[in-house]
Image (cartoon, rainbow, N blue to C red):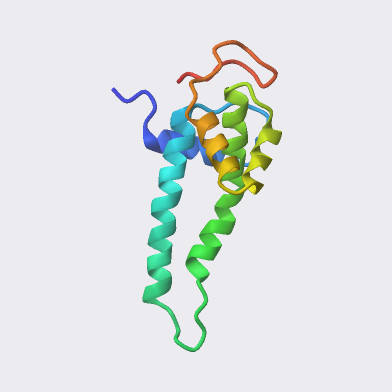
Length: 124
């Protein structure tokens, strides 16, 4: 029924934690991004709930964010590879607004249907 279930796509993001040289489909990136946002808000809620007024440090969300920054970046680079772009395009993120919009445009594009330097086309 569900060829690409959200859990399968999230696991794939963690399985390829340091893989910057392959391709990722749109569902793989977007399911992981949605998971990341929801989990980050959950850990932020925990930070607020257990905040010490004398020492307000966001330990839970900071740890979660640091632990997941590498798989998130690697997924974005692999998604760029899937639309036949170099991973160096990721550095557009440093250009305010325009860079983020350009990357968003690349991330929503359909997969390049031919084999490229980074491998076979993704399933979706």
